[in-house]
Image (cartoon, rainbow, N blue to C red):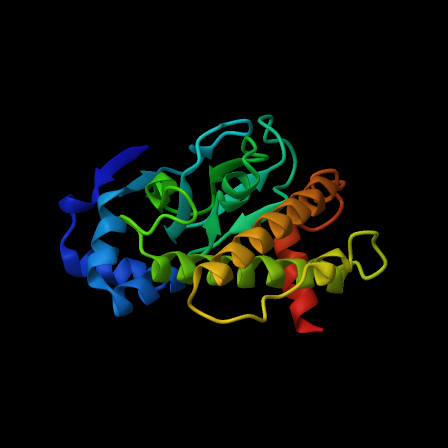
Length: 229
């Protein structure tokens, strides 16, 4: 593992790497100053094949984005059998622990079959209290939570398509969408509440997938098959 400060990279390289991440791309386009604040609280970490990126049970609240390579997700520290999921470039991970305030629920390893993995690690403690607008603005927080809610609902819809008869299949649809005025604290509070509830629900789904037998394909394979239906 090698931790690299953002300042060690050429700015064009950083911009190009983050252009594949919708949240950072949107922040940069709207407010370059906010983009700089986020970069100041972030770092890039590289991992060699087989190195552990996140340990199950860790309590840190960092948020991670995979920039290059591939990561394998295992339900325990033992790393036995096939991974239950694979993380590919552009994907975020660590968001469930941050939203539910629980320890990491899985061990994530740089895939043995891939080359070096590059991870963008953001310290989201800079967000502060939800209703604080400094140093992170209301608009930046709205961009983050809109993107997070969208991603969580998408994942839950995919799980529903794979297991329509499961007890949890329709639970996320009972979590109401926000229909009030846009761009205000009221919207942010609603999005935050949605994100926390959706994250808790996704954790419940993941506990189920963590108990799958090794005869079943990894979750990532089933996601693709479900989307192709």
